Amino acid sequence: MNKIKKIEVGYTNESYKQDNIFFQIKKKNGLNHKSDYKQLKNFDFVPKLIEDNDEYSKWEWIDGKHLDINPSKNDLEQLAQILLKLHNSNVKFTKSNIRKRIETYRKIIKQKNIKIEIIEKLYRKINVILKNIDKTKPIHGDLYKVNMIKTKENKIYLVDWEYSHMGDIHFELAYIIEAFNLDSEKEKIFLEAYNNYDSYILKKHKILVNYITILWLYSQDKLFFSPEHCIKRLENLAEKN
Image (spheres, rainbow, N blue to C red):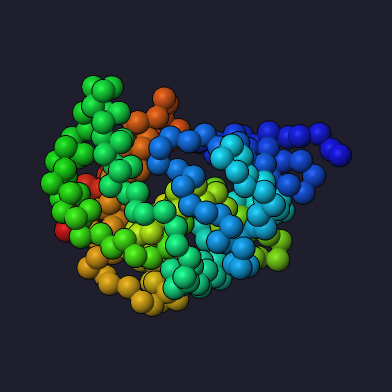
């Protein structure tokens, strides 16, 4: 058996690789690791689950790279089909956690005495969006590129399901559009491949995604990346909507 290698990518849990196994020690924060991962066994875009308990999980190791920040047409169409399969499935994750995540991050930022103008300005708008959010579809909930692995055969896998919950498909779609900063052409490719969405609701969720990302960044012990792009993006979206 080969030596265990620590994986440095990721912001919450401790992750390791040994042979063909991905080993993750769960760091619970009251918001994550609440869904039953065994429900994912029939999806061909999820690594095989080997073992799961309250302390850790073991998964099949997928040999590949994180999805490029500039995804191809094929990548976007494949992602759309993956999400359609997930969102239209009968999987039952834990209940929606978006409101609780935002409330928790807001509380931490207040305790840190951090004030962000755009966060304060959009407080009521965000609460209205949260009031109207759908809570009926199984979603991954954290689709940054580090949670998508592309193999040499160009097959995409979704990993790290700790924030999966029953939620709104528009949050998931907006997450990908905003995380990859898709231009209008690529956004159109992605959305046409997915097809079944409401453009008005999607605009609201683009605001929500940037809002929660900024909150999450400032609630951490350190800034893992600059929030400037999200802040500017949020300001522009809020002005138009």
